[in-house]
Image 1 (cartoon, rainbow, N blue to C red):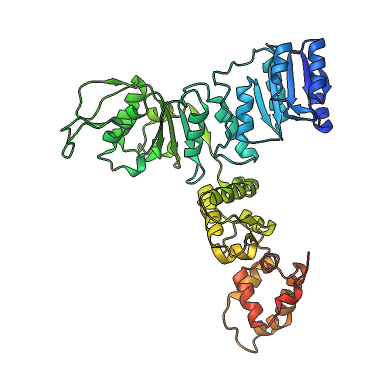
Image 2: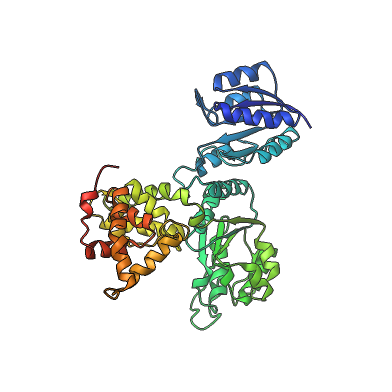
Length: 472
């Protein structure tokens, strides 16, 4: 397959790479780098597909797409962007873009998208034009999050069931809210229910409601979550913890689009989009007969997997700044993070993922003594917990051996060990402090030992760390 492609890209290196890849596939490429040049080319001739960057030298490639539609209303448009936010992905979707690729992108995937675009018409958006997505709580520009954003934009115009997986604290409910708020059902209710927090004997009543007298304590009719979410979205969190009996009734409701209240005889039609989430691996549970296989396939129509924070450490900076702004809006002091504090945050383990990071940032905003929080302040407030893979935990052989030696409280005076320590420990620590300008956190990382251990040895060896302080 071949065709003509208009490439609108002001980065010469990227344009050259794309041009070479598409020409190898037989496409004819015309290049330009501005909105004005783009419109002149489109007025002069037609193209099978256009690839455009968002931020061009004389305007926004998305904002000005109306002019493109004037010249070529049927031409598929593929959007490329370094502004890798959910807002950009949604703007691309709202503009009827055929596809959206955040930079850096997979060149083979881009070529495949151009092939498909040359044989297809652009998809038509059903979203009202005012859905801008501003202020959405999902934050991050890492490649892992770009995949999440692209999946979100693919399910906005349909009611397909979505299963969101990921560890606790990765933001599964935020993804569900984004799909609802940006999709065609956003004028309807968004109802969230944590199935793990409801007692097993009450979960069916919570989901489907009950009639008066259906069981002891049912003194009045109750409307369940399905009916509450009618016309909107029902978010079933921790679906992997749902009891077997409730799984059966849920499956029946999904298949039929009808529910029956506990103790009721009448079936009630409900129009609900289902988004489910779990932090558990459901497939082993299916093998152990702890989760229904047919329910899994009913829920797993569109899977979205959220990455743990340790797999998107490049987002920690922007996430931290985002949470500092939120903290200030919530009435806490306005703070800033110094570069060494950001570096220290990036090296932590984050078992609680984004939720834990948010709590840590709020704690820093509350307890810091200075408006600018550096690594030392951070360590004093939240302690040290370097992550696996960071310099301070993945030590080389020398650092590990030294850490073990320093962990011994009372070396025997006169022993070979004691003499060895006396020979190199103090000069080594002083050298590390000198290399890092007196920064004890970085010195500890350089030595491959814990910072508290370093502080203890500095005191015991009568080292004066202040004399090593300097502007690095």
